[in-house]
Length: 590
Image 1 (cartoon, rainbow, N blue to C red):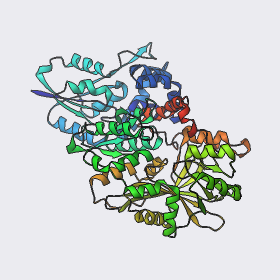
Image 2: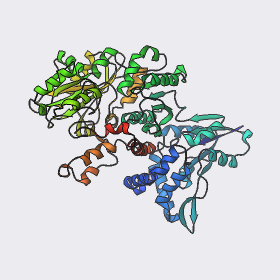
Image 3: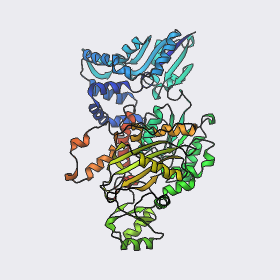
């Protein structure tokens, strides 16, 4: 019985979507990005299942090619097929194609992409048939519509069976990679989902709303992990990444630890225990819950977390600074108080313009007040909202702000390190970085390693430092005992912390990684750097051309192989802006 080997094209044979790549190569990034924004409502309705994939695809196709002559279109597509397209083909898939060709199997491509660029490539590589979407052409001009239904999902099965109707006369071997291939994979005798089936690598990323979670999902997906994402609403950004293979709606550990735990354990029990998933707890409350239930979860998942006492030390800023004092690590002068009345009395005695009020626990700039004396009900309300507070010496803004990111394995060895410097932040007075750059800081890295080793650390952490221009010392601010907001910068610089974390949970013989590219910039654009730009007085803002310089490539949201995720970072932020629960992340103290 003969064998028919069927291959999807985009993200199966290729590393990314060939239509998007063609458009970008011919029209440019900016034109493509504007088109994505223009048609984002249609893309969103496709993502959530209201529209078919044909509608947003046809909108984009019409935007760029409506009215173009067929002769010009063929020139563009054939030039692309023989040039740039070759660069995005997966070498491992070429090997599979060659193996089937050597066996004498019939080679077929069934794809939603267009034959005008797939056909020439397929002919060069020995394919016998190409079944694709076809553009509509009238009087020698493209109309912007398709002459055939989009070759996706059930349409792939229908079109394939039109060409090969006698299903019981051949063996069908199918290679696919996504939602559009599921139906054809189901009728195959041998099915290989190249995302799910190339390896038994599974990961669960919690708190999928946040940008660090999206960075982790992308990094893992690109390394052939089957990634499940947990989030508490459909506006969870990482749900819509092309690399998210499973979406799990569940409460967060911060809002409902018990319900979160039940959802996580239920999810973990769906996995084959011969291939346990790697668990990525992304937020403070999540990693605390996982650490407290470590013995139970270790039977179901692989992960790295610090000892509970060490984690509690890192989560409490006062405890962190007291611990650093024992190691003689420089730190700002800090005043701790045990009660509200002690705090009120202390701040009345200090010259508050030289100090900053901080919650003992928490991340980012929430609850931080710079150079202001709070009185009466306002002070009491702040204490009740953010818990116990401390007063810390304010380091002048001229000093460099640095971050050192580290990963420790289960033997408490540091196996990855990375340093960056903040260039911009929101709010400008102090908050998450919106623009940063990779730097080489071996002495600071060594000091950070010494601090975490003293805590018997396992897993990831980012240590924050600030240079004091008054004495030239770099002083410890806090430890973020989890994956950090600027994670994408480290990945782009060559330190893939999510992948290294996953490998460290499985193997104990990883070689330490401490080298990376210096001078790499990465911006948190939406909404971070946009808000930073708009919140500054006009006389202090850089020019608009300087603000836009390097975009979209410098934006951490931008990913050519995950345009769905890129669009989701914009659309989900818009939906979240309607929810008062998230206003505190935008409306910060200045």
